[in-house]
Length: 325
Length: 285
Image 1 (spheres, rainbow over the protein chains, first blue to last red):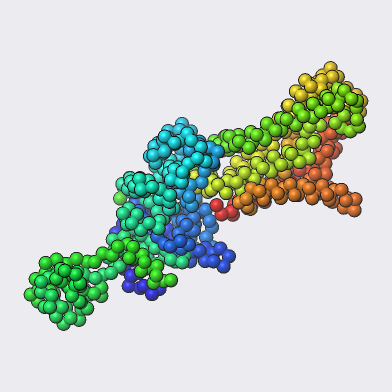
Image 2 (tube, one colour):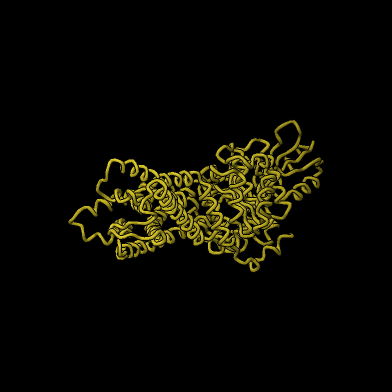
């Protein structure tokens, strides 16, 4: 691991991790022939969080999700779902889990509603009398109520995706796993997915969403896990990760020269800020914000504003995935 | 965090949907599938076609062979139709159902959905075996029922009696009982085909592979049983006793052939279902 400073900051458990875990991977590994799809991944998903799973194509996101859900047996390591070992405890955990993995799977000759009725019939937590109501509510929630009677065969890609989402939302879940939920969706559909994730989050459910749409993850997630070639290269709270990303501190001040002099005298790397606003940029190895500001103020520098640089998730992602490749 | 108490793992009992509901869902799925319905319709045509053939040939005189036994002897028709369909058509139908049951579901991505619900892997095998057995039974019953009707309406004769190959006559009740016996025998043989087809279905994502291997195996069995030097293989070949259904047309009824074939089928069912279960417990979905 070359990115030790990043990782050290990133793997510090965020406050939410103190509570129970909705999912956990310990040393998960999976190979297909000579290809290592997932290589020793340790991941904690705190209950109530929205975890964005990021990674380039083929980085092992889906395989990791499939192992967590018990669809694929891991070659090494253990997976836990809602506190139960997977796959052995799947009968305890999975009734509370809704998932859309590897695209929506339905029968083309059945209508959307009939497909969902079939899925609902196999849901352990749905009573026989609740099935029809649950199906209609789920169809309504994903905006498919009008197309429910049409055959799945005739659905557009976005409608298929919506039906898959409805399958995951048939009943209140504690954990919802969405693998590329916005695939094939139009902007309205993407907004719907974002709204649904927010609703689930507000209701206390945990959401794991894999995506390559970074803006999507940045908008909806509280936590992030970044996979690269089957390894976890960063994981933690979104805010912490973004802050640890650059670490630089922007100080806005008219006394640029004095500030630089003071900082350099204290052995802190700094340079004058590019751009129109006069100020300095303190390097990422510098002391915490408060200390730096105190130092400057004591030296008589007029500090107008100081703010930690926050990277865009896109920059962070590019850096993390390029570093290790 | 309000979710904390709910996440107490001890309070989660293992849950499963009632088996009856799973079987009902499977039944609905099998019967809603257009190809199942088309297939059943085509099976209904088989006895009708035979009866028409016999009726028109009847005007010009009788030829030799089993089919000619149908002439003027309506209740023979269902048994003859079943024996003829047994050669290839009924196994084809069962193989198709088994191919859709696992390989087809996997190809559609719906197998994943079932396992995520969750349906336990053992119950999934039960569900799928049930669905295939239903198709086998329905197809057989359709051939037999339409055979009885067509036999009485189109062929008629013998005053509703069944004249056996041995020359004696049976009343309609006894005759129907014999048709029922052949139906049970045929369903048993088809269950063996279905079990093996399910085993193949559980290792592949391609329904066509299942069809090809089952039909290929039946053809190879046919070839093997035609080679005199390989006669010692006969007791192992599923197809060896498939003509035993015709025994029901003899008087007194020789049960030996049907019993031997049924025991052989039972062995195939055991091996096929064992392999299916073994594989389904490990299969990635």
